[in-house]
Image (cartoon, rainbow, N blue to C red; front, top):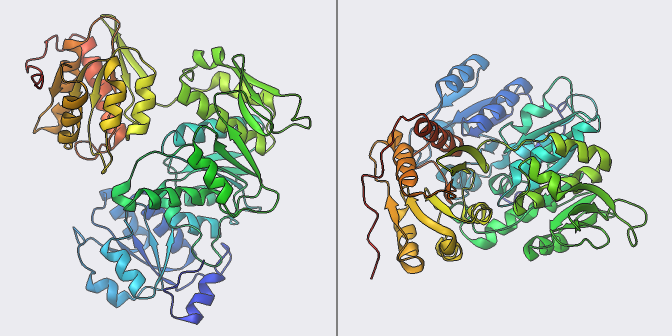
Length: 518
């Protein structure tokens, strides 16, 4: 599974043997593509190891620009990168580390492959360096179209309760490289992996990951603009199971994840552990009479089960929605795979609180509940969010990433009181509403000033909402068209709701809904 583009056998041999923090990295010419959180962590790590580091990025924050200068990494900011800079060609890198934002068809990536330079991602680099502080931590790897962050946090909280030193890392916001460099070290790293990061793993000799346990929570349409096709996206996600040593956790309600496990090349002895909202079979996690049960990690799997918690208890901590219960089951399976006792899992769930921007209840105004699920960045996540409520004024829209929203609108049209469309990809949404909900009150926010997008959307939604409705921000699209990221979008929604609750704007909508289509 090595990189077929490496043409220098001597260099290939050196790279294959760079499998430890204590290997000789000195003088290695490394190009780092991207200078965001991940790119900076890569550059900082490699400089510490003695490599010659050249960072290329179209955009760099002032903070990272200053820090790269301080640590001694070279930086090139060519703006929009449409061709290979001469400076990079002169640098002649021996290795390139690609940040997750760089697509496989990016000009720099294509040039790197043609030139015979090895390409790694930050996850492979972190795996090779995981022995910096004593015994390497066990890795638990989590991916899926939705629920990754919550499941990562749930798993980490359960493991923490058992007394092990554990850190959530990866796509959750903390680079894995920062975690492996922590001077105190960790017993376990619970790593959220995006499809972008998974695309680059297990390609090179010496850099193959061997996680303790792994899960793909679910699969739905997403990121086809990056991967190019549904099959490429699913192939990237399936890589999470490769070389798993103990437990491959999969979603019994999603046959795609079952197929991934069945086709995965795992270490002998690794078990397949299923979860869903039904009664569990042997080696499964599921629900019996409102009780979440483990029938996988006990001796008498055929005739007994271990109780973990109840649906009623999950409801009290905001984890009662079906998709949240599924995340709890997956997290519990991962925690049990590493030896966490059921009583510890039960206690961890009692004190767990879901993050902001994930079905966060912001306020109730005039008997209308305002809910922030800005993290619903694709139709699959928006579907789970909409399913949680009976009567919804839906704020929807953003960057749809080439994904079809027609089925989503059709499925939930009966529960909608009205809809407010935001974002740049409005045509597909408008057309879907015309087909499946032609009489639904439909509004559009067409604000040139992006700071006014969310206040306008909240005013429109509040003006049409009736007592008992839920005004739900579940965009089904990415946020970068009008906001910094999904968190920025969610904060602006919450701020607009609070301004409304404080009487900052009592207006009804000043723009009429789009007329019903004939």
